[in-house]
Image (tube, rainbow, N blue to C red; front, side):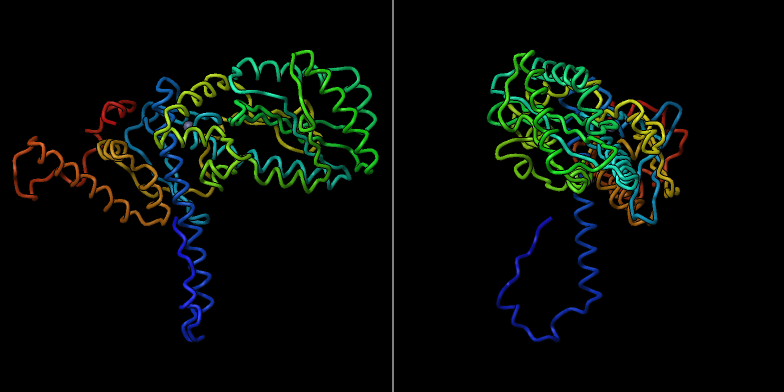
Length: 415
Ligand SMILES: [Zn+2]
């Protein structure tokens, strides 16, 4: 998305040149829509990058391969949101290495966290946002660092002092733990974000005591794993507003910033930032991202402590895979993409573009686009001498029979 700077000479134009309020609103909406289209195309571009780095993982088939038994790709449209969705395709459900599934899962998880915080506050409780980290340096192996970190945290929350003293004294009902990592000048930087749900608000003095007691315990537990820390080893943000701010940003920071340069501390990159750097030609980022994807595979991104969801009135947790495969409630059928056309969409990396066109809800626009891909393919083949130089009237037919589409799952052969 490009932003046109205001030309000061034009700023002196008379009022008659100022657009009506309606058109200002419209252009703002158009900018938002353009940003969303750009994000969607970016997700598919990053997913292509992930596919080339971990070709044997499910992300390489996600939103590409037809599900078993399916013979064409369906496009759904949600009129209320002005969004389009692919259906009848495989979904990997990976929150770690799939930008497409991760965005969908994050939306649901974010909503659950928001409901949890609201329920706690409405019930007279409070929520703290804690960040745990440890000292780290360039050259640390992520697998070893993360294992030691996880063990230290488990020891801390399992310690009698935490369970019997701290939890009871301050009315801790439970916690939600989010696991994240970035990479910067000092190597891998693993950290946990923890939302601590308390049965009541604490005074400033109580908060100071709570922070001091948890810090002491965290330092001791980390030391058993040969991990050190400075003041940043534990940061407590002590208001439900801070917790809400964290929840609002959960899973969307990278999308909002668009560029890895704008995320995290100076020079630090999130996994999506590394993947984007690889897509832009950074070979070192590829090496780092592969290490990350290998280590995080199978880990849970958000962990609710036992019984907390029930206490807050939330339903049982669904798996990432279930959420990724969900059909949006208001989505209606918009059109079918024949298997042969889908091959062309994949070949030229047009999944994001097609979805954006479909978001307007007009199937004719999509049909014209697919027709354009067929013509491009025909011209391509003719240029390579694969077809005789015949009149356009003999070009491939606009609609191919479903029966010719072949069994689902072989899309990769053509991509
Ligand atoms: Zn996926």
